[in-house]
Length: 477
Ligand SMILES: Cc1cc2nc3c(=O)[nH]c(=O)nc-3n(C[C@H](O)[C@H](O)[C@H](O)COP(=O)(O)OP(=O)(O)OC[C@H]3O[C@@H](n4cnc5c(N)ncnc54)[C@H](O)[C@@H]3O)c2cc1C
Image 1 (cartoon, protein in one colour):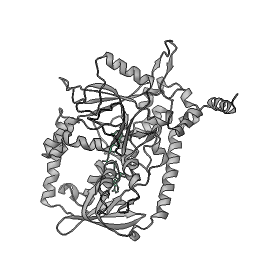
Image 2: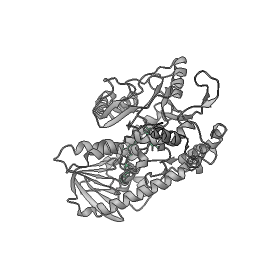
Image 3: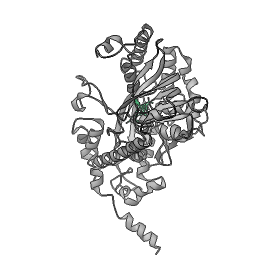
Image 4: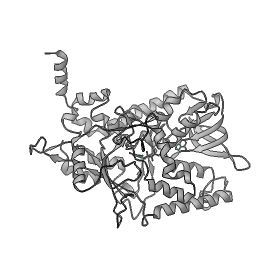
């Protein structure tokens, strides 16, 4: 007998100890903290005092290297005549961020997640701890694309067209944004139609390996008359479909991997990590001319001769604007300590955008259009025609073998999956709007360990026992 075979057979008998699964959140938190501190220490040695970098004058300054900022930084620095500075409050993602199966466990670490909390609410968030929502946001290069669950979903075409109408700017229409989606993609997903997808771009979009539960889910949906069409194509029908992922060879493919890492060598492109931007600076004509930021406890400034681009995310960008004195005057004055820079045009712009947001929120009957719902199934079913009950999904006992997980280094196995394989899109409007679904169901084809409910409560900020009460009757190990 080949000795390597017997070693493999021996390894196959070694399961991952249950104690690892039961304490996954503590183990991941410990490793992430250690790696993030190591990253920060390394950066402090390599790039300690940004003032000594060759120049603090740039053509463009980009604030925030997340999903949007990474793309803008890459595109602007393509032109060697532009000097481009990217300021990011976090550091590099850690190796754990690149493991798809760790997507949930990576949330809620203060070194890589801003862990924003909403105000306590009286009439909603009743299942959440202190009645407030914990909003995860990536705090590292790649931003939330280094923390998210990697589902590749573009917006609905109707939403883009709606933005074009509301802003009076046709460049937002679906027809006009589609070529940019295609240009970004290196598509090897489930729906290779060149009308909607591109190849050769920096962003890898892939399909996950086939799995039996997803197949069953899809065939059940087909029996009920739902179609199986590309959710990112022109009109998203009511459909149950396998999803595409921003992954490459079984690893997360964030905008850091796609747009920043490959161009770090550009001489006209400078990235400063752990640089927390506190303010946009203006000249006497109220033109943005640079930013102030804090790194390693010291405040620095950088100037931009062309533009300052704010791409600090849906919460970070308005925050920096408000810190710079731009926003609703009454609201800013209530904080008392700001130097106001509110000119009438900015003031009235903010009202205009408020009106647009208000319209968008009310477009579909007075509530936010998309409702997101997570369904977790523990499926007990017969395999191979037998009626023997067993759970199938990636978290089988057999999937917990050491060798299966070592397979991650060969770009496959359970760790190379984000355990989210299919979605269902449908409309609850009456009459239904088939091209504009408002309900989004997600299939997690995984078995459940008894710590799952508790972990879910922790990562999503639910009151203790909320998810546990749903999951516990079904856990199997
Ligand atoms: C847990 C989670 C799961 C998700 N799952 C999915 C999914 O499966 N599919 C999907 O399509 N979308 C998903 N999303 C949403 C998606 O990731 C975000 O909508 C998208 O990444 C937002 O991009 P952005 O560029 O606006 O902001 P971000 O990507 O968040 O980037 C903002 C960047 O700015 C930096 N920053 C903020 N403030 C400052 C400051 N003052 N100074 C310097 N830097 C600053 C941040 O550190 C961050 O790097 C998910 C999000 C989360 C958090």
